[in-house]
Image (cartoon, rainbow, N blue to C red):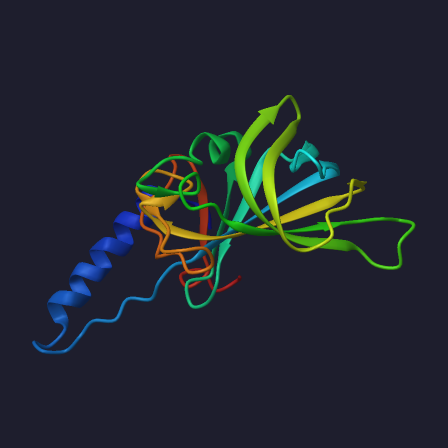
Length: 193
């Protein structure tokens, strides 16, 4: 079942309000936090380790997002919108850059190469997505084949999207809003997840 994110959020808000009204006085209603993570894929990658730039060559047109249990929310947002909303909100990814892990396929290597980085300043350049980065761990390859970029979580007031914010790298708050037209699959309401 694919739903519009704003419709899903209105439904969740109504359900939360109903639960609050039905909660006995003095009892705390506990709402689970929604933490979204992102995945971007590309045909290959190139990194300038002196300029500290990462180029996802032939990046996919969709950025996948998903949440951890118990919500099990998943969907896609257009990569162009992901980049456009990078700086939206008081505590956005522009203000509070996310950690990410890059995993790069190398046919000649025994295993994929990976590095942990902090991402900043995304720019779409034709079919490529270019980030500035700071290396936190591992070794950034200069180039490689098929690439997956796994981006840290965010929540309301920052991150990517209107009214999202982050509470710190790796500990961002619950999600509360999104982009128009984003498909969301709520596995809690759809048993075939």
